[in-house]
Image (spheres, rainbow, N blue to C red):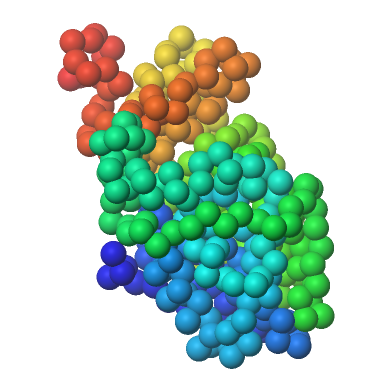
Length: 329
């Protein structure tokens, strides 16, 4: 598992990013902010205890003050951003109210049990094993935020202003960004995927486009995405282009009378073929269909996961065989 390249990027002025591999499934990023008096804030933990401890050790080597973390901010509830929370002992843990609620709905123990016995958890166990079977979840714990907010919250970390802004629902119901104005840096959580297809569990897509516009409107030079390499605003512009494209193509399919499953295998990505994890089109199209139909089409998560696995395996059609949908199989 740990043969993936993981490195500490020094952003200057007491700010760091911990970047893991290519940013594919489970390989998320974190951040460290050090204040003038040595106070510290960490943005997100990682998917496992071991990965999180390696990250915290790297922070402490770079900044002695980081041997003790004062504040932890969870940008959203997903386990690759929260399952190591228990290792940041004594810190205030801050997240959106929706982040807390979503963590309670599917806590770390559920993932631990599903990873240990995938067959007992049906399609979710199959999905977890297929995309994230390389991770060892035996050392994860359920430690949700101890402080929550809605909308906006301003923190002071060692004399430095840190702005937390809720821009979800988009990727999840409670996505937030962490903006450090004095350094022109923004940690975006999974509101930005760089070089990888995003996945829209919550939506609507208009909210995610609006979130991109909000980030583009900030006076920032450095973007630390939730997954993928550190960048500038160009990665946000690319993501915005992606969403306007998928929105337009999915609307065409919807208006042509295609089912959501057919549309998921039909929507074209010619401009984004180089991005990782293309199977996420299935979840994205499902969410857009839900919103276009006013909720009349509301695909079950089990069906979404099943079709994502089929897409990854090279299926060109949502049907298991014997159909005449025109996909040439």
